[in-house]
Picture: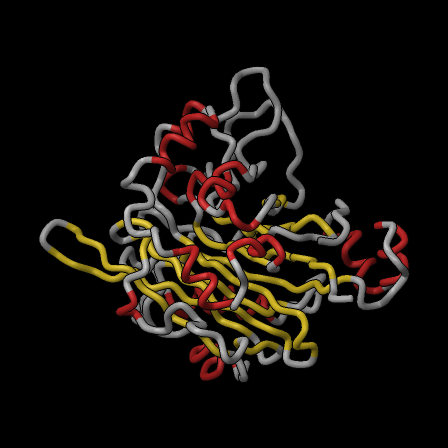
Length: 348
């Protein structure tokens, strides 16, 4: 599984520049290839709520994403972009046409929902850089590449998955699971993990999720007993899954400190999980956060957009992209985008 060292962006920058020093800090052999690190952008684009709209907000949203993708100060290059509530256009198409960022590809998935008598599809996108490719010759990889796939937790709550390998190092592979699960509203005010587990166990939460384990096996060729050996990234607007709930008076660590409990209930086969830490956020006695990822109509109190891994050399770290850029449009539930860095053990 590899070593599990814990340091943030600054130390990771040093690790990327000085891999031998990184290895010494982690107690690993001083090898330049002891870790494989890359950046991920996760964003709920809010299509259908005035976001990702070619006649309005899309240009501003793309400018934000492209700016981060090309930022020379990134401690690790952005190699994946995950979007929820983003049906069309494909982010890779617009990066190419508007910003001349070419070679990216996008996998699209969808889930049908109902709003009164109206049926809609929520689209989710996994975009990947030219350094990566889908692992070939799998039974079903990706799970879906069409909006008509209808892979859902519950009605209108999509997920998709795809298994990738590095083009220049095909023995390193990673499974991406993109999710936008339902809310667990009762858990957030209580902060009681039993309420979170009860919500997830409710049939409504995972109503249409029963085939997930077999879908992972089809995409990866792994056996059920060896799922924990896969390198896994879970990303998305995960709502309360990564939250510890509101902080009781006098206690520490407000809601931006992510916990793995909820993810491990939904994805028990992947082994222990680690939720991205928000850079610059420590523990305090504050209950009110005003710089979370969600939402414009709730004073940005919540950190619902998360990146989660099951193996790590360095703790996954995330930060909000350009905290001063929002709001980008006038939707009632606008989210902020995050950039995160994950660091996996390199193959021997």
